[in-house]
Each structure stands twice: as structure tokens, then as C-alpha cells.
Image (cartoon, rainbow, N blue to C red; front, side, top):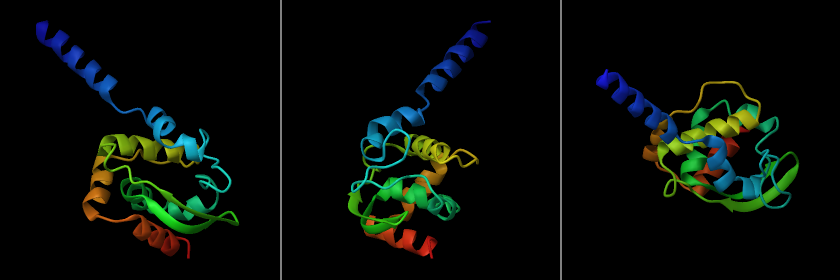
Length: 142
């Protein structure tokens, strides 16, 4: 009986410790990208739209941008953005970033498996930089 109680307490603590993607998104992303992912004109592009059909097809793209940031000029839905999205690798761990990526995917209305900490760790380990993220974006949108 004591073992069952201990296991229940342990698993409930783990569930509470799991990162909440929407709360992390609200804290770290919504200021620029808005709560619904629609973006801010002249500052941050929308995280929705047909361009995400191609960008989202490569799950490592969003993982890389979250880990390493993105900078330089990009076009989104006919609008030019010149800015810099910070890297979050130094602020959030891989599980938290996976939760954010999964939340962004839900904002886009894209069904699919939740991102995993292992996917975000692979992006972290692969290295990168904001200009490299922009170059990867360009390649995916060709």
C-alpha cells in the first residue's frame, strides 16, 4: 500500500512538472507573435499560413529556430520582415522547447505528433545560428 501511494505521489509530481506549452509560449513568444500566432506587422511574422505547410514538413526547422534563433530579411505572406528572433537554447530546456513547438503547431492547426525533448536536443546538438536558420528557411520555401 505504501508503495502504491508513493508511486501515485511521484507520478502526480511528474505530471505537474511537465512544461506547459501555451504558458511558455505566452511568456516567451506572444509579445511579438501574438497569443494566436498572427504576428505583429513590421515586427514579427505570423506563425500561421501556407508557408508553414512547407516549413512544418521538416520538423527540425522549428526546433532549430527555437534553439538558435533567426535573423535577417524574410518574406511572409507578401510582407517583408527584417528582424531578429532570439535563440531560446540558453533560457529553456529541451522539454520546454518541445512544449512550445507543439503549441505553435496547434496554433497552426497542423495535426501531428507532439515534439519531443529528443528532437529539440538533436537541434541543439547540431548547432546553428540565426543566419543559418534563415538560410534553412529559404531552402525549405524554394
